[in-house]
Length: 368
Image (cartoon, rainbow, N blue to C red; front, side, top):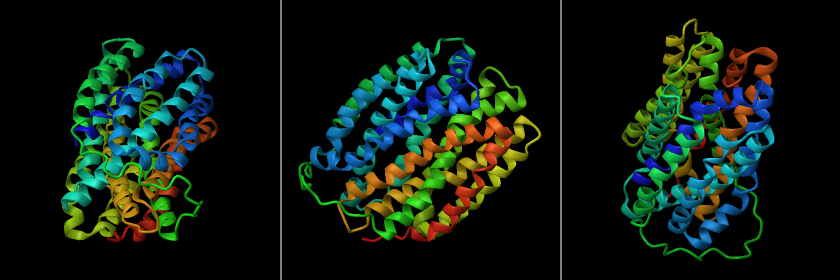
């Protein structure tokens, strides 16, 4: 849980800086959307082989090595001076972040199986708490006029030693090297595809709020300073709250019922954001969206890891591929639509994938 908390702090401090980088590079919504495509491309090139990598070297080794690489690469986008540099930096960040987070999820699933405890939602709750803290720090640094480059670098390298100490306390990689080096290609099962369809809309919404909430508040309601980044901070706080209560709710009501209730909340939240007439109403909408998407990905990880058609790392890799693709494909799509029709219409598009996610909640049955 400590590692899940520490991992996204530096990335969270980057998110309030997006409007600043957009202004520095003189990017319109469509140009920013093209630059943001770097992360999904980095992920698309990594996750097809990341599952095998984690199976071969183990989750603990992946996490330790991944933290070193991630801490350097997360600083690069803020140093970009051209749209191409921003694109490349984000692509490298996608490679580092997707590999590290796959290792984290595999370790959390192993902890659940070894201890018999349900902890996945709480682990992701700490991740949300970490990105909230990072976003809050980043917003504070904006208000204090600290340059983005140095603020993000400070966050990354203050966190790194604590992350390494915590990572070294994970159990040994006793399954490392267990995967077959030449496993034949096998299509994902229908159950896994259904879980992926569910999680895509959830993480697409998460990515949209991450990348566009600050821009939305600044452009639509003319906010400035710390207020610009506070929308994502509130969103992340509610995601954390939902995840901390998610394990208990899952135990009491079941994964499917919890996912359906949260899905309805997310849809209502997006409607509030789109039709808000004041920035404070928008913040309430972001809060409700945060509750709505909170438990989706952890529930999907547990469901995918419980499938018996292939190693858990392989199924979680495929799920992570779809989840992070949703997280990072959504923002560029919204940017292209916003260029033509405005950000309100761009965010309204999220109603479609969220509705699809609601349909596929029935696939979250855990199979042990």
